[in-house]
Length: 500
Image 1 (tube, rainbow, N blue to C red):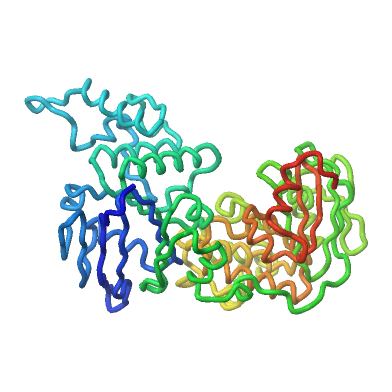
Image 2 (spheres, rainbow, N blue to C red):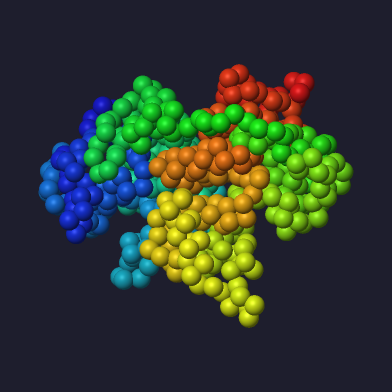
């Protein structure tokens, strides 16, 4: 990698209907560099990249790219210059083959006829360069989303891109596929291609980017070498709050034991797990994927029948026959997959919020008392700061953070004693995360006990009053807030010979 500046965007401003989306934004990146851009929703990241790609025009400012100066770029001019952008919503045609998608509109031709053999050979060569094994004749619609993304990257390279913008490329990746993406990015950077990486996953930013530019409210907070920051400092720059504000503390001390799980096991990986949860506390559950954390939550909620063990709530032994039974006992579960398991996304917000208490809102003729329904929706909107037009808006049109608030609002209608939060802020940007953390502490202060499962270790450390660690379906360690560290949790979660 050289120190040659390939891109320098200077004093970029853009307004929409009088609302300032970008204000005097400047940043630069070097050839062969991975440069991250981070910020909350509405910070201006996407608008800035659309201006670079020619999809939108800036009101003022200049773009300097490969030694040339431009006041405006068209989409065609940006492509011809070697600027390519891979949006979060992939732009592929499912019934065309991998090769046809890669060279769509730019197929090698002779006398107007597509040279199929040349098309396939060049596509295969691009995929080999990326280290991706794909049959170039496969229709794209038959691929996994991860493989589709690799096709998008190959398409960008086929345009001889010198700079590739990746907008939330890891949002649908995990495990091996994520590692493959990182390897491809590293290979591209080593070959001199510049990558602008937009992501809300800050751990990835530190892993692959050499510099990071922080945007807030349409302005640049600053550009920093990633090695000069830690994760918490970066979060503070993004949200403009101190760490104590990001992870608020409970104002009240914990109360009496409200839930006990004694040696519970199911037909899943879960075996003989025990815990005690106290009123007004947040108990974090950490562990690797597949350690049994979600299975423990499902067992307590009655979604998976116990093969042995006991659940005790307020001193009374409960046989969790079903989720309905546990809801009646005062337990609520906010699942990991809110769209599939927590919401009816095609229904209005009001229906989702009032569903658990619908019987209380209907008269003896079965008709819903609309005024009472509206009161509950208004109360939830105010209490949880749900950004919505009205109760009739379909949930699918809300942001991830606001969808999660609707799930929480639904369960708060049941006045639970215990709330189980499985990955409560997954795929949610920092600002709405902070609001959810605040709500969790408000619930703690009201005496509600929270069992929080999270793969985000800073979140576990910041929000938990105590932390349990799971491995192979068992609880293998417990830490107080004061003694817990990321290193200690990871060691306990991954090392089999450490006693509990």
